[in-house]
Image 1 (tube, rainbow, N blue to C red):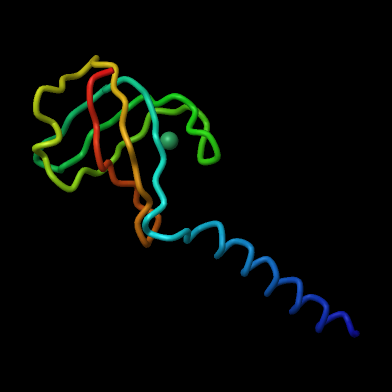
Image 2 (cartoon, rainbow, N blue to C red; image 1 turned 45 degrees about the vertical axis):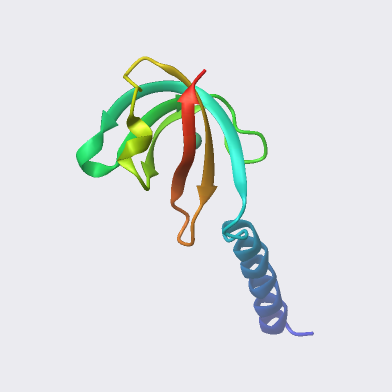
Length: 101
Ligand SMILES: [Cu+2]
């Protein structure tokens, strides 16, 4: 095999590997815990300093989208929470459920 063929095959292999990682089924969900640092109802967004999420990401502070701002009911900045997220097509993380922990 010549060098160009080898590089093409390698690139396709990497692409396939990345694609498999970046686009799991839409039904995939993860349980997480953390502390609320900001709530932006007008943006349907909540920022959480979350603990490590096994198999997904290390601890960090990041914003999450919520589909329904009703999920914010009874929650405030500083609250410790347990929540479930899913990853939508495009890589956006959305909170499916959240409660004080
Ligand atoms: Cu994160």
